[in-house]
Length: 82
Image 1 (cartoon, rainbow, N blue to C red):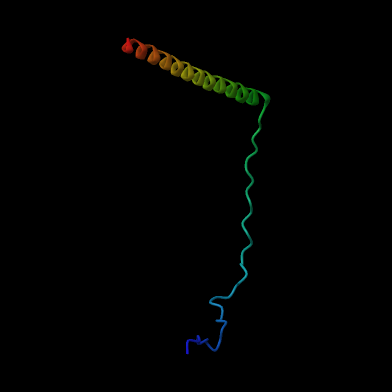
Image 2 (cartoon, helix red, strand yellow):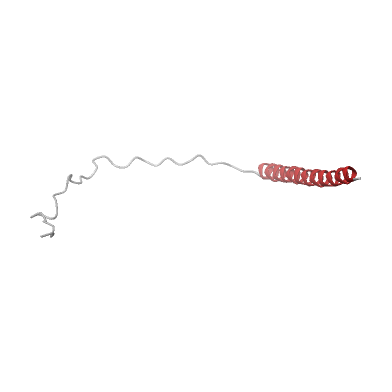
């Protein structure tokens, strides 16, 4: 009663046929060579060191400002209780 009805031909014919391309694949272009000398590497290393030092200085400054804010807050709170 509830059995499915299957079609007579379970595999449909292919919608398109595969044809081989007539022209060959385009030639691959190579990237231009980049020459990296010692001055470039040295400049990158110095730049990285400088940026790292600046980031560390900002982090230390932020921590010291936060500590100073907590100390001042506790001092001002003690004055209001007196």
